[in-house]
Length: 197
Image (cartoon, rainbow, N blue to C red; front, side):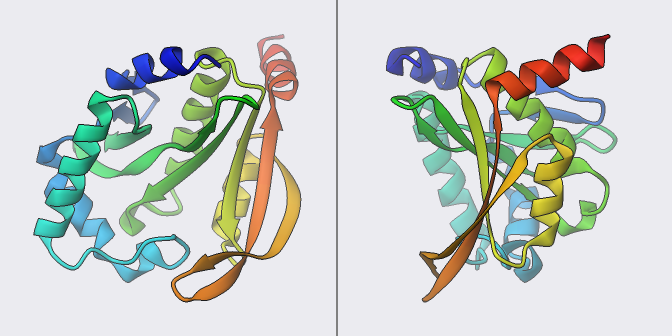
């Protein structure tokens, strides 16, 4: 991947749609919806960050995101649920390794919308973007040990579980074991061809 190419794409965050979702840039008007799920301990149980304590904290965070969008340095989409136009989470790239043509995806969903296949729907779209627009060779997802829901999502979107890295990350004061799943470009293209036959 060319550095300028990637930055140019994300400096004008492209909007995308799925059956139930609109994926677009995070905006200041999302503060109430984002604070709703970011302040919920259930949301953050298996994430790297702590709960948002105040709406002001969430607003400052969104302002930081907007500034990073302008330089093409932020790669997460807001997930807008079409039925009620509510922002119910985010999905995007937590890491872009241009040299090795690898991206890592991540997603956060409002607990009120868990169990509906939202993460699977959003992540599938983001994976398609990675392979079709960024032309990467590998997409991977990492999750904390015990997060069986995230492991299930990775399997549903065609990833292969590669195993656990023992105590590979220091999170919230403790060493945590990290699971990793991935899908390769050739696997994605094969699955897509098979679906179209």
